[in-house]
Length: 50
Image 1 (cartoon, rainbow, N blue to C red):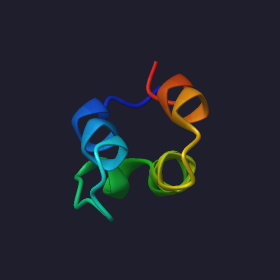
Image 2 (image 1 turned 120 degrees about the vertical axis):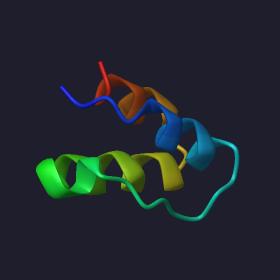
Image 3 (image 1 turned 90 degrees about the vertical axis):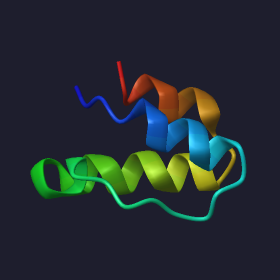
């Protein structure tokens, strides 16, 4: 479980990327969440943060 919901919210609002400390701890999970959000798959991206 990762708690980077602020990053997800920004991506879903149209940001093109984020800088997050979470990436140091869970790089693959953060990459997957960002990819899902950037591809418009909000449900998958939100599921990754809970």
